[in-house]
Image (tube, rainbow, N blue to C red; front, side):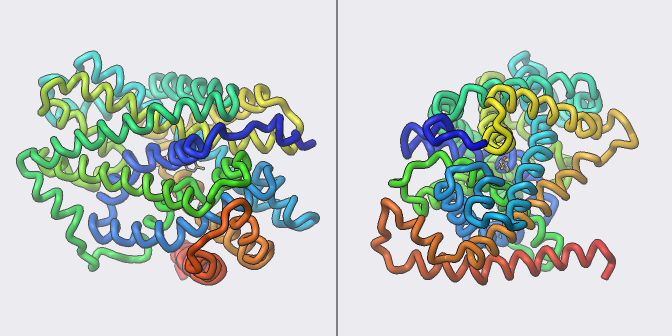
Length: 452
Ligand code: PFF
């Protein structure tokens, strides 16, 4: 059963949509994950490859997702069904919904860490601490499965609550105020980080590329990170696009969202790496704990650091929240549009399911030894590979099944591109460059797993 357009909800304004889509894109992927993978994959060379992936592959796929969504005004499964009825293409939407559910399950675990860090910072836990005590606090906390689960539950409950509120009043309202504040605090943090002793080494690591470190794994990470960070490959932008009105300019929206997302990730690197190199014994390759180990050191080195630190982790939690609501929204939209469930019932049941599915991740950082590394593995399969596969199929669908002519008609609806440049460049990228590049990278990664 399909809800009519008026009861599906829609964005209140164009700016509201851009902020909400940017809210989906900007999250832990930018501030937690981007510095972590950059650190593990050699620094500047990774950053350059990442930028290439965003520009050449991410932006065209985002335009494609938004146009599929707006054309069909439906959830990901319904969208493929509407354009290609009675075909297997709906499975691409199904893969997206499943991927969204699984990403939500572990994403809320890390988002819960940020809530805990708000409390730790505000209560002065790090004041006067040194890198060693800061590290101990982190490892003790993540190894305490029960605590981690409580924060995970709290975060999931918040997400369900907002998604139950619907599109305009819930998601859009929250994004409007909080995203600009995050940018401001991050910029201040960068200023302090850049002026710490030893900062120049960090800047060098971040900005001077060493291509000898680049191998297939690095390229795959960059591609996966680009799709993860831009919320692409699982229908989040199809879903958000489905609430758009016909007179919005999809190309400029996609560009704004990608630019904002990339800027925040890039800034996060400037906050982390200079500070990282000013802390003895900390290496960029530490992994998932990176920002939790580095940032408290910066807060200790600034006036009002306790307050500033608490505000920063609070905003990080909010950035994560605007992403978890988009993840949940994808799955909820599916149950509303395809199964006829109410918004409330969908949000509650999907939230509960994702909470339960997230438990092994909550216990995978030192609490239960056989679960060690579980979260990393799910991240690899669903946060990276599945998104890249989804993006590949979306390119093939848009470029070859739906067809660029029909897609361009949707892009032009309500807005005619004065530039003669956009249509041919986008068509070429979505038909050839994106699918070929993504397919080559995916195939080689699978081959490397199979030991070929
Ligand atoms: N883009 C989000 C981030 O960078 O944290 C994560 C995410 C949200 C991925 C929504 C995928 C998605 F559909």
